[in-house]
Structures are given as structure tokens and as C-alpha cells.
Amino acid sequence: MRKPLIAGNWKMNNNVSDSLKFAATLSVELKAAGQIDVVMAPPFTALYSMGVALSDTEFKLAGQNLFWEDSGAFTGEVSGEFLAEIGCTYVIVGHSERRQYFGETNETVNKRLMAAIRHGLIPIMCVGENLAQRENGDTWQIIEEQLTDGLRGIDLRTVAHFVIAYEPVWAIGTGKTASPDEASGVHDSIRNYLKERYGDETAGKIRLIYGGSVTPANSRELITRENIDGALVGGASLDPKKFADIVRSAH
Ligand code: PEP
Image (cartoon, rainbow, N blue to C red; front, side, top):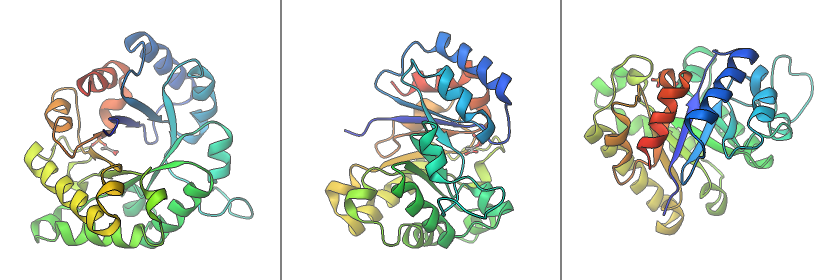
């Protein structure tokens, strides 16, 4: 059985004091994570203090990105080593906003995944098509390329721990969610792709989560689908009450 995972991607929101308020409210709203992996991805500047605030809880932290080198003359970058040192368990890799605004490619996604693996971080690898690609009927071709190139050189045992987030770009921050049928159709195809590439046992361990305008109102019908193992939540994760409701919907 795959353990459901709900991750909140705060993007460039919440400074340290906002983050600490969030942690305090979340701990009241959600006494324990229970059978769910609950993950928050604050901005880099708030990771350390969130780690301290959440140290007595089961909630886990993720970086929103990492660089592929471990240290050196790379101004403005943050390495997997640094994220692991301050207690991150997960790291988001290849988010569509990184692809769209910061030149992320499938090749750089692959390098970042390798760096995450080196530092024992569990990657939340994002894939998904944009609106034009969807309208052209290219959804699967795009996702297959993202998976094939992004996962190049990653072996069975390692990939089994990965989380793959299917995030249709047209659904991110737009209020347009993929219907449960649309989302689970793509998730089923991803699972089948992983089975062909890595075999049934390994593919069956990889968690596939959905992201794109998930809210407490739609999370349950998405997460209860066979191949949707949780959610990557942007906007709704900024409100600890809504985030807690989404976590509860996964129980
Ligand atoms: C995201 O940023 O990964 C995301 C899914 O955002 P939203 O929930 O706001 O669509």
C-alpha cells in the first residue's frame, strides 16, 4: 500500500513570522499526520525556523528547488546538502513555474534529481502539459518525454522512493482543476509507463500525486482514485485550515 502524501507548495509566500503563525495554527488544526505524509515547502528563508517549530511533530519539510552542484561559485543557488542539513526530507524538482520562468529543462531536472538522491532527499518530480500542448493532443507525448529524460540513469531501487506530481500547467493557480477522470487517466498512463520501464513491483511503490487548483472541495474525489496517491497544493496550502481539511480528506 502506498502512503498518501499531501504537500503544500507555498511558492514565494510567507516570510518567517507568517510561517511560524502557520505552524502554530496547523498544529492546533491537525494534531497528528496519522497515516498521511504531510509536507510543507516554505521559501528557503523560512525552512530553518519551520523545522524548529515543527520538530515535535510528524510534519515534514521540502525545499522548493535545489541546485545540482553541492557547493561552489553558484551565486543565489541552494544545494541539496544544505537542504538536508536543515532537516528537509523532500524537495520539489521541475515545477512548471521553474520550467516557465527559470529555463528548467528535462535535462536540468535530471541533474537536480541526481543531486537530491545524493543527499537522501525524496524528490517530488513535477510533470505536466500546458494548455496549448493539451489542445494539440500532445499531453501524453510531453509527459512521456519529461519522464524519459528526467528519470534518465535513475535505477529501480532509487526511483521506488520518488514522488511524481502530475500538474497540468493550465490547472495551476487558475481555479481550473482537471476532473477526477482526466487526472486519473493521466495517472493511470504514468503508472503503466513506470511498470513498463521499471517493472510492476517498483512502479507500484512510486507515489503519484495530483496538483492543480486542489481545494478542500475537490480533494477527496481526486485522492480516492486508485492511482492518485495525494496532492501537491499551491494556493490552498497557504491557509492552514484549508490545508488541514485537504489532509483530512485523504484519510
Ligand atoms: C502548485 O503550485 O504546485 C499548484 C498546484 O498550485 P495551485 O494549487 O495554486 O494550483
